[in-house]
Length: 119
Ligand code: SF4
Ligand code: SF4
Image (cartoon, rainbow, N blue to C red):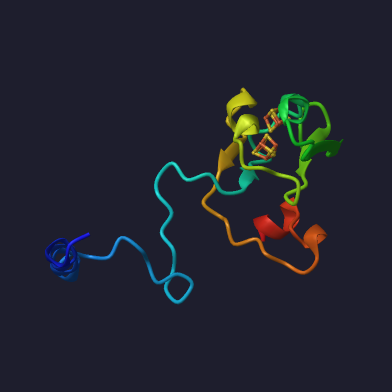
C-alpha cells in the first residue's frame, strides 16, 4: 500500500466520527433490534407452557404459580439462555419481550434469575 493511500485514509478518518464507543466507560446504547435477556410479564401469562416447550436451550422451566390460568409460570435460567428469542415468538399472549439487558457477568451464575432481573 502506498504512502499516499495511507495518508488519504488517515486524513479521512481524522475528520469522521468513530464507529466504536467508549463502553464500559460510557453507557452502551444497543440498537433497536438488539436481543438481550428475555423478560417475562406475569400479568399477561396464562401458563400455557409453550415457551418451555419451544426453548432450544432448555432455559425455561414451568414452575407452580397461582397467578396464571393454569397455575404455572415459566422460570428462566438465564445462564443457559442463548438470546434466540424463540420464547418471544412462541408466546401467543405477548407475555415475553426481549430486553436490552446484556450486562450479566456474575460470579454466581444462579444469581441471574428471573427474580434478579425483575428487581
Ligand atoms: S431467548 Fe431462546 S434460549 Fe433464551 S429463554 Fe428464550 S427460547 Fe430459551
Ligand atoms: S408461552 Fe407465554 S403465556 Fe405461555 S407460559 Fe410462556 S410466557 Fe406464559
